[in-house]
Amino acid sequence: GENVEQHPSTLSVQEGDSAVIKCTYSDSASNYFPWYKQELGKGPQLIIDIRSNVGEKKDQRIAVTLNKTAKHFSLHITETQPEDSAVYFCAASPYSGGGADGLTFGKGTHLIIQP
Amino acid sequence: GAGVSQSPSNKVTEKGKDVELRCDPISGHTALYWYRQSLGQGLEFLIYFQGNSAPDKSGLPSDRFSAERTGGSVSTLTIQRTQQEDSAVYLCASRQEDTQYFGPGTRLTVL
Image (tube, rainbow over all chains, first blue to last red; front, side, top):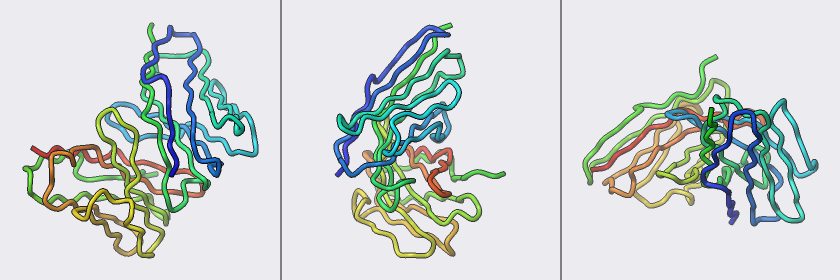
């Protein structure tokens, strides 16, 4: 089955700087890669996703890049703000939305924005 | 509109007792997922429901775990004879198109 590795486990950056979180996956059949943000006491919330037919996707301060050959994808947050502090999870699936097998998640990155 | 709701938000139980966790998906969402989130870990997929179809139970951790979905809406996850290793946050998600919307989870503590 799919295995997703995520690094780093903790990332501390100064407010206004950029943050990058990286994930690798094992199943070459995976073609859907969402990123979720989880705040304390809440469920994960989708912030951006990418499919294998594109290499990069942007949404305001957030961007995701995908390298299918190397089987890795990354989340980039620019101009970080205090409200970006949270745990971020990457995930992968052969099916858009997760299909019947659900999403395979990384172990998460605790992003800390230092004022 | 209303999101996915789960109850209870917290559950403390003694080892060996049975527990039932409830999920109310977003109205109209036919796909529903259960995940388990252990401390410091990612989410582990447990089971998937599509409408009223019988689910594939192969992702459940043991035969002490069962789940059902009544009328294609509300779902319950039941854990029998709870063990300490069952302690985790249990998350439910319903899906519309490609997006899974998660509830706040039920934190289960087995003493």
